[in-house]
Length: 484
Image (cartoon, rainbow, N blue to C red; front, side, top):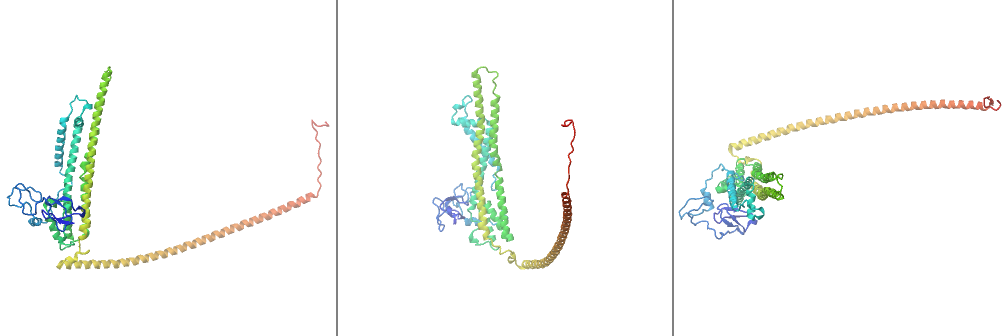
């Protein structure tokens, strides 16, 4: 969805769901209402017309830069077309500032001034020394968190304000990047596709953008991509460059949170250190050896417990600071990641599809001797490829021949192995048959001998059975016989 700013006439581009919302123009910083119907955009009420308005004595130009006092007949703002004509198209890029890391000295200065303001506000509420903690008012209790552990609490507070100043400056840089996303950096009026003939016009359009909005990740990436396409005329090279640039921007954004993460780690640690120091002082004051009165002991215990409460206040302050810092930190990280994803999506969905490199070869864009040289090179490469294919076919034939020979050798070897195995099996079978036959023969001979022996035994027993054997019993004499 495209429309022009009614104040500076800059061509803008937004998503359709933004229709009806009020935003600031990235060119003149004036508030404009995004029209629902972009066919005819009336100037928003309360805004000055594009021309014919006199510049006040302390005014500035359309890009937000401070200007000198001018005569009443000088216009306050110029049309975007006039501003484009005023800019000279000079190639060579422009100085790129860090899109995510704020100035360290500026962030520390803002944080230090904020720290002094907080301490200055709380100092009048500092409770007197003889006031019991139970009688503190709400502001006195808050002030006691800062002034009872001055070194630790003041350091934590300075770290906290410094971290928030960094987040604030990063938010301003992010808003600048978001404003640049509204620019129509690739207007369709210059061509539906970007090719070798009109890429220069698109690059010139980028150089005519306001200086304040040139230095943004969106415009810088578009400029680098188009200038690379103008030189190499290769969409693949542009795609690789955009991918590398996206990784660089992502790592740069991730690295910009190193100091903030260090603060997020150090603040609660300092709170625990303050607690340990307070506990050490409280415990060192416990000396009951010289106290005989119970009231003195009770008073000492009251002082010790009060010291313990004061000690834990340092941890409380550190945890509150860490918790308060964690949510804005993660929110800013998500916002910057979303912005980077939007830029990547624009490059992949808008820029790359419109690039037309004329095919894979830029020969068609060459003329004269360059074209002849390129044609000769193409023919030489084609001949080299042809020779390579011929050699490759010959090599393939040799490899096939070697494979066939290898198959034949493997077949012959397998046949030899099968024959040797058959002979070994036959030999083993013959040996086994001979051994079995010998065993059978020996067993037969043994059985015959056994049968002959049994037959002989039967004959002897038969002869013995036909004879009578008389057995006489001889009487013995002894000491215990009856006939003695």
